[in-house]
Image (cartoon, rainbow, N blue to C red; front, top):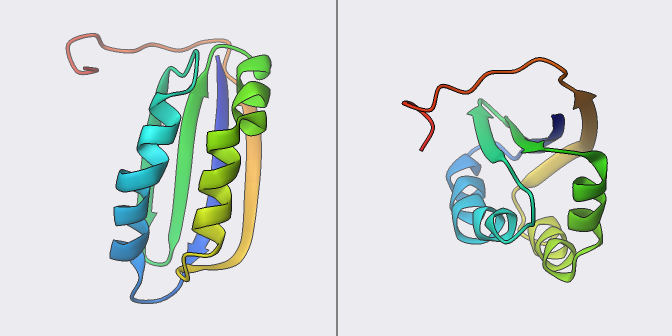
Length: 104
């Protein structure tokens, strides 16, 4: 499994705007991606991370090259609620477990 973590700062007082954007645009975009295993969005103070789970690096590359991903990135960058540097990290996870009773 490959874990992709995108991290961004959120302008003070705009976390709810950011989370609304994530729900309205980001989550549907991710759900359209072939091979996506899961998405987690974190929110703490003025920082958010979008943690996506993938079976392989090629799936991430296909997402990043997709028109819907590019349009969503353009839209979020113009949203007026991000601040600071946005970073992306990729990690391999050779060992993992999902509890099928919890994950739905």
